[in-house]
Image 1 (cartoon, one colour):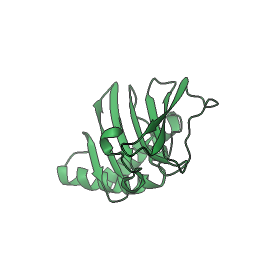
Image 2 (cartoon, rainbow, N blue to C red; image 1 turned 90 degrees about the vertical axis):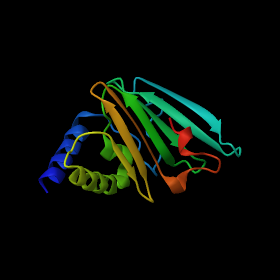
Image 3 (cartoon, rainbow, N blue to C red; image 1 turned 60 degrees about the horizontal axis):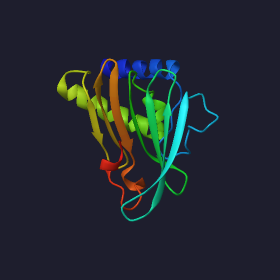
Length: 155
């Protein structure tokens, strides 16, 4: 219980000090009018010629976030790398609670609340890693991947 509370407090602290990010399953966050220092959108095709869009934004803290948007207009994956860990509660949206429950279970089994996390659930997959000043990660909705897109395409 104490470990879970610590994780919740850490997540809340991150939410208060970092900009909002895309939430999986919702509309893209970054457009030319956002507070990100730069944004770039590139149209891509999956292996089966299904189009999707990748929007890349560099936040004020130097962290780069990519949103992968399907034809429906919903974000099916996100990735990040940079000097700061992004606000996972905003980035994962409604999937954050399930992610946090799984991470807390993993940490309880390991006896430690530190280290990279790999959460693979039927509804969401989240991979985080790195170290101070160099954080990386990606998250995706397995059921939301367009035809011909694999997790290897999310970078």
